[in-house]
Structures are given as structure tokens and as C-alpha cells.
Image (cartoon, rainbow, N blue to C red; front, side, top):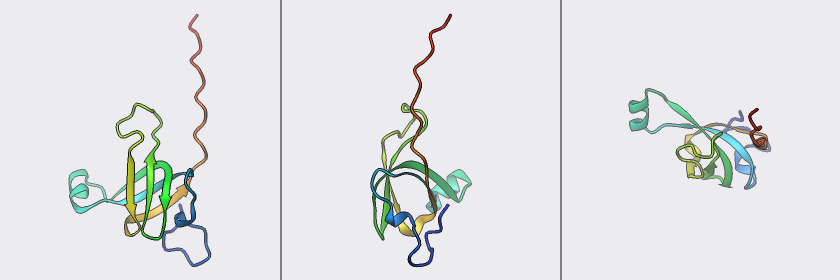
Length: 99
């Protein structure tokens, strides 16, 4: 994953164009952290927008019927711990007929 505080000139999430599939590790808010017992969570999605202030992802879970699928998540720059570009999701194969 790339460091959100990387040196100038390095490629980071602020430069990613819309449509890039990525995972962003974000810091949980204190209430979320207390409830879950975790400090971080990962958001897998497609970049809708990214700038110096935040990155906006449209959730892209493995199952299209998963809770939150297609939901937009805004992650403030201060809450981004790490981010990584992911390859496009593989095309789903049609189910094989049963014998």
C-alpha cells in the first residue's frame, strides 16, 4: 500500500483517476473503534473522485448483493493510512449446467 504522506513527486491516491479500482485503509472514528475493537478498516471500491482533501470510493464488494454494494464512501485525507490500486475485478463466469 502506498503511504499517504509520501515524498513529493511520488504517485499516491490523490493522483488516481476516477474509475481506478482500489483499497483504502482508513482510520476509524473513536465510536467506531470502540464498537468494533479495531483501529482501521479497509474500503474496497472504485474511485469516484480524489483530491488533496479526500478520496471518494464506490464500494465494490465481491458479491454484488452484499450490504453497502454501490454505496459511496468519503475518506478524509487525514484518515487515510494506506491505499493500493487493485486490478479490475475478474469477469464472472456463467454457472455451468448441472449434469
